Length: 198
Image 1 (cartoon, helix red, strand yellow):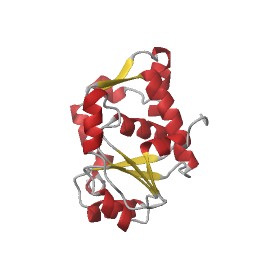
Image 2 (cartoon, helix red, strand yellow):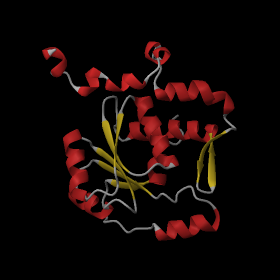
Image 3 (cartoon, helix red, strand yellow):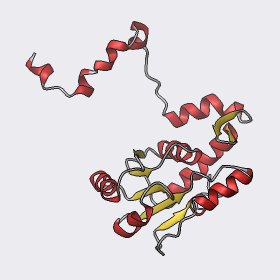
């Protein structure tokens, strides 16, 4: 009994009480989430993978984007075991980058973008994260750029993939002027680092 009390919740696995016997006995796949995504969807490249506001992304676009983002992360020195911090909401860019990190064997730490700069920086410092990916709107981007010692800061707008007049309007509303800093790059600049390297 004493041994059980000293165990952490993750070791006790209390969530298993909600699993069926079949689920408890199921074998975990040997492949990564990136490998699974490719093996299941590479032959369905024209099918829609993501619907985002008024735009869609096919599996082909997603898989190609993941390859390019993985090459871009590698170009800035991200490697297996590294932690990349995301201060963002779920967008096609976030999904693309998380799978890209999984391909490299790196980890994604996603933080609520409503936190203050000081709270975000505490997370970043505790994780020893060298790369920060952040929205240009909801996160305190200016403070993060000015106060952090990150090696690379990648910014993107949640309006990146919104099409038509709605997209033009949304991008105008989410445009922000950041301090001049060699560490900062936007989504297009980041992805360009991986162009032709997949």
